[in-house]
Amino acid sequence: MTKAEKTRQFIIEKTAPIFNRKGYAGTSIADITEATGLTKGSVYGNFGNKDDVALAVFDHNFGLMSSLVNKKMAEHSKTVDKLKVYLTLYAELIKAPALQGGCPVLNTAVECDDTHDLLKIKVRSAIDSWHSTILAVIRLGRERKEIRQKFDEKEFAFALIALIEGGVMLAKVTGRMTGFKAAMKQAEKMIDEIAK
Image (cartoon, rainbow, N blue to C red; front, side, top):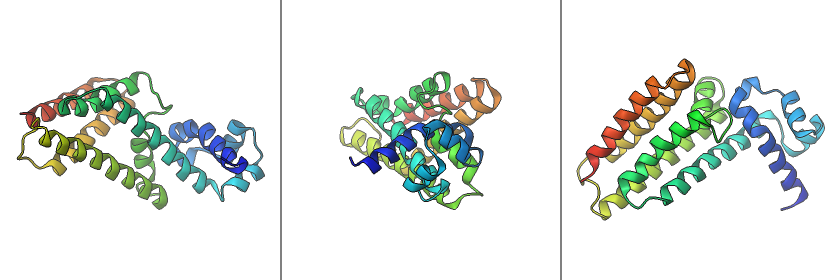
């Protein structure tokens, strides 16, 4: 890794929690320079603008979440248990977030849906990736004869994502786990229903 690449990575890692907690609009260049100890000129010498930092940070945060999911899934052999990783992992993230600020997909989606097209594209790509991961798990489960053959797997995957993110949103906004637990109960029921 070159010195410039190391500096870029340093900026990303130091500002990732700030962007995830405060959002794009709430994170200032002063926040970035304070977190990194770099000057504004140094930051902009490595990134063209705040947008570039935010886009790189989103990729970083989503990558951390994806790695965590993959690691937890690898601990299970059964398809149903792999899918239920999302339920337990997001419950853990609410109580003791591995990422400050919580889920970067939810946080960024809520902020950028009408205000920042480039971040919106990143979030859409992250959701597509998450959707594809669920589909891959389901297809492997079908090959192993652990999952029913006939159900709409694409619809299932979108519904699972919506329940998880909706539950997280309810927990964050209300400060209570009641809505999250209700959403996870429905998600678990959905997962159990596709098992053979």
